[in-house]
Amino acid sequence: MTTKKRIFALTTATLVLTGALAACGGQSAAPEESSGSTAPVESGAGTEKVYHIVADNAFAPFEFLDEATGSYTGVDMDLLAAIAEDQGFQYTVDNCGWDAALGNLQSGQADGMIAGMSITDERRESYDFSDSYYDGGQIMIVKGDSTISSYEDLAGQTVAVKTATQSAAFAQSIAEEYGFEVVIYKDSPAVYAAVTGGIDAAGFEDYPVIAYQLQTQSDLDLKMVGEQQNATPYGFAVLKGNNPELIEMFNAGLANIRESGLYAEIMAKYGIEV
Ligand code: GLN
Image 1 (cartoon, rainbow, N blue to C red):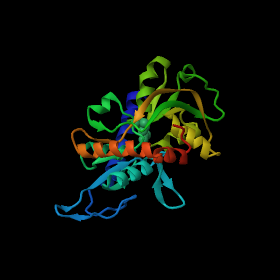
Image 2 (cartoon, rainbow, N blue to C red):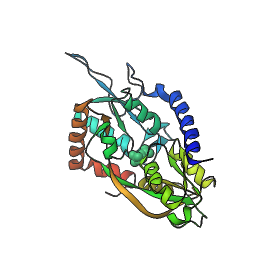
Image 3 (cartoon, protein in one colour):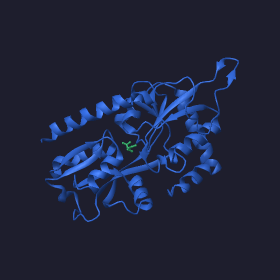
Image 4 (spheres, rainbow, N blue to C red):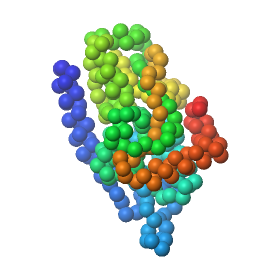
């Protein structure tokens, strides 16, 4: 299959899945899940706004399912809870997954998005971002016993990435130079499975995410090759021009929790050095 055909086939599959998930980003009258916030409060002006936030669902340590509690946890979830508490705003969070979250933000179904999302110039055309809360870049991953040790070794191979990510953009930017084909997957677990299963010779993923997987899952048959590329700030996003007060509150709350030491505590909880 040619690169174009393959990407088209996978994009079609992604669209179908996104359609199935679209409901998860819808506005709901009552909070389905309020992390660290209480029910809407009646004020003189009526019911206080409950911001609807969407997030990734399999991007540890930023957001992932805690099997023990059955709820989503991670750096992004804790930062959002701490910032909302500091600033006194109400929110619900839907861990829709990266692809669905982006779709919901773009279509205005969500008020904000947090997902280890890199602040890029291209995204700034569609979204407004908060101040950065972390810097992360991309790294190549291969199966544990792979002999691939450089981009040159990718010639004639296929390389797995997650749709619409910086990893996808980076892989696509060097694919022609190194002679490999880029294969797009819907989420991070699908990328890891393609690499550990030998379907694709390598993949690209955010460095802190892979570092965390390797630390916490001893049975994950992956290793990193080379250095992190393009370290870029991560930020909280709103659709351009929408909910400017949410960005202001996020920034003010982030500054406060940096000051109070809570930010450092949250990062340390997930083993992230800052
Ligand atoms: N940081 C990467 C990006 O913004 C990946 C984010 C993610 O997969 N949740 O493209």
